[in-house]
Length: 441
Image (tube, one colour):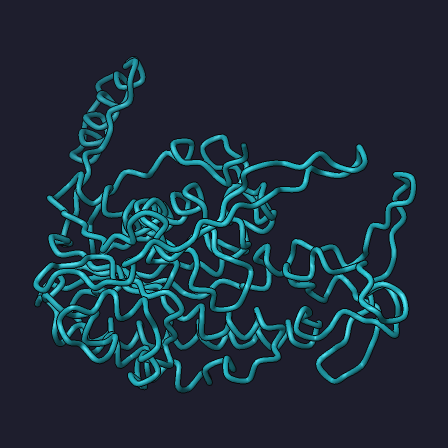
């Protein structure tokens, strides 16, 4: 019986022959890093403290502590630039906060637990700020990492609100009066943008009590976000492309999740759980539930005597105050605001991409990825989670990230670049085992 090869069957055969023999190779053939239609010679990283590399800050809203050179060098933006440089020369400049920078803390000792069933308690050492850490870079230096801690989207349309932000001042050597100007200096050709977390985070960290940190209205958020992107593309290189990230559900960060709503009272090392009484946003006192969030600063205060009936949080006449609590209604409010922000980002990016022949802006769904992290992930054989101190991702204040957390985050941006059809790019992922989580002595 004769056999006839059609053009299609011939192509299939030619494809299968090398595929068959490739199974005999001892090592896989690695795809070379390539950027396709991305240039990235002048990559700028735009955003807030996550982009800047903040880590090991204090569990207090808007603390200036946490920006120092060692952490800056493992920001997700810096790690992403390392992978980009495998394809094109990328000289990623970060204005270093030398020494201890703005100050930071680290675990220096694990105190023995009082009882066998308890975990050791970390003892922190605080490293004070280094003199001169806030000085701006020399004039004319192209700084690639333009992350400004505590920056809000709302401030893009209100430059005067940046007056007191030392982090903005230390990046601004060219006379910009607003972040939109700073973002586009030097005609960048590639950018990452992760901004908007602090439009709701500072409010949540105050237990939803500080009105000066009130969340940015969704409509204002979308308008300011569009203004930033429009200005960036108007002033940037004609080939400008970039990736934007949306807002995670911050109520699942360890700062809001580390404290169990039931207090473990210890009597002769016999554990007995007690209800915790909280003061809600409407002045009501009730027992905390799993739908409420007790904030990290309350960790060492619950159960202490402070001159009131019973111990703090353990008696209905001495409830945990509202500033240390996100009650379930406040949690829902914050989650709805974040959903609104993410819808606004999707809309702005969609409209912007519609104006190009080939879409220029990729997106990374950080809302989805951080939600998956809360349930626990295994990456590169490592278990990652949102667990406080031991999950590998979040640093000691339960808000910012460890080196391993930043490596995980950088890989999410790399995935978004690789999967965006318009870019035709391929970047290698980062090996997470090369980077530590919280370092214990």
